[in-house]
Image (spheres, rainbow, N blue to C red):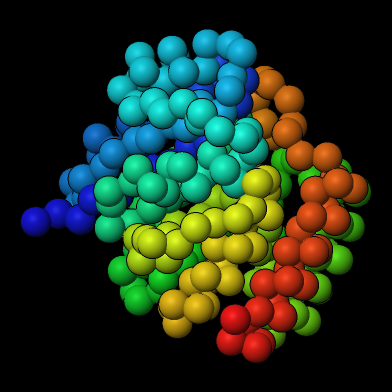
Length: 232
């Protein structure tokens, strides 16, 4: 029996790009005979046609009824995901669906969570403030988690279902990226990375604001790092 892969896509006001994301993803699915796939789009209170376009492209659309935010949207998607593996993909066309088989190959090699690294793969979205912020937060991650990941903050991740099964994620926004890694380590899973190229986002607007989300990332790195060190 083929393993099932759940692709979870949080989306808020991404009508300009969600169709392209799903078209590329569907092409990947057609070419991949190794796995079965389900595609779940979490419509995070969009005011445009994001959900409608996703349905037309054969995605299962779930509307977030609670508080908005990427973290809450992803947590909702994880609860509905049935796959053996879960892949997180952004809706703004910055992630490349054709890289998904590389993530799955790494999971098959024994890793529990795999992060796409823009440090090795490059990014068309890096501004100076994003670059500096990423360097600072990567250093903080190394200090508090005691491990080296070049791009822990990247939202392009794949992992085994057990990392989210029966676990309530507390993050409201982007800091869920850190909480996922922390929980993988609690589950004693190997965490690795592969190169991944980030395209410039298409349409919409960037949902993160560097100073605000940078602070949230730092606080989450510190809190989760302390919990891991003390077995919490």
